[in-house]
Length: 382
Image (cartoon, rainbow, N blue to C red; front, side, top):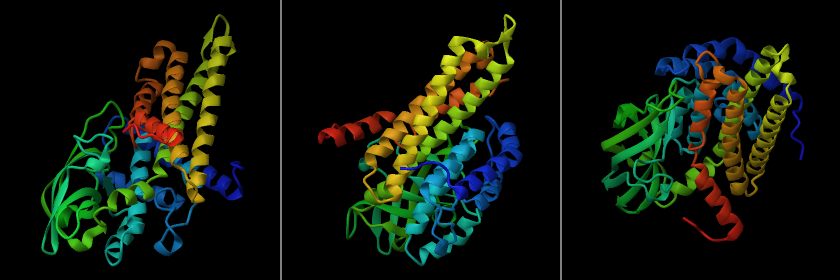
């Protein structure tokens, strides 16, 4: 298995790196811990789109580049190095784009062009305040009323929720011809839902929202997955998000490593750079080794998904290992900075806060371990 960059990947990554430094990094620095509003968020995603990172994974017949998952992961890694906040918004474009591609016609055509041009932002609403990681027990409910379904309930921790023009919502259909978990496309303007942003430890430049559905009347034609099939659809289409989250966290770790290395080379004690100290070199060696190991795990998971192989274990391992290691690596970066590492003058302080959030996104790391445990023992612990 060869994960060295081929010629096209090298061109894509190099060009993207230059663009990020010139166009995105100044925005990221200006908006660190400051909310990026919806209009600016759409402008940023439109700038990213030509590189394929927003919707390049879609097939060419739908307006995408038919980009492979490993290349997509590489680009997301680079984006997260510059701005994990903006990378999360892009990740939701990736996730919701998978849903758009799976949306039946003619509903898909209604949204596709404006989604591709970043005029519209979509999100995927799964988590709820009372269910945590047990998404199968969704309490957000839909009742059939003739040719409509009436949706009531709340969703929690919805990335891009406040930005969203429409969202794919996992609901429990409790009455009608069929019952069970289903997925509906709900339009903010047409059907109405309310959102409010959640203030977090970090990553507040992007939207993470609570969503409220109060008697939202949605036509039955907006059902994207039938009752009983909604959860399987979401888990299948969104499985690649976990290793990509791993690569994004490794992007934060890489950025922290780069800052720590440069600081160690510039900072002198007793007449020579602290990079010459054995303990500092040991820390740097461990940091970069963990980064490379995490990237390889995530690439393997994405490669398995792309080839249609069983990937649940690989994806869970990559997500858990990468996000935990990112926290350890950034912690070591702050130690190398000494007292400066906890001041807002140096970016590692922000990175230390940002890395922690990824431990709970796309399923907590504890849930990832239970998934791995179930796979290797054949016994279900949850």
